[in-house]
Image (tube, rainbow, N blue to C red):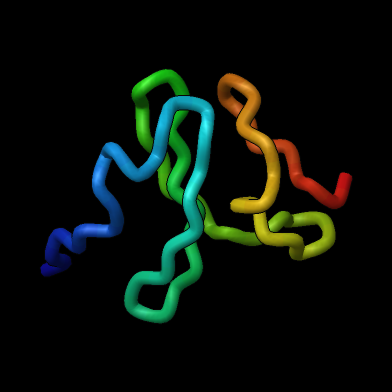
Length: 66
């Protein structure tokens, strides 16, 4: 059974921003989109760039390398 793992505090990720974290060896980007939080792999599927360095635009992250 999986256990809950605390990754960040809500206050650490303002609306429209993201934060890179590593949990149990997995690199993730946490995103606050209008008060809703999401966790994604922190790697662009196109070139492998860290998504945490990109820009949050409503429901998308725009890779900094594009």
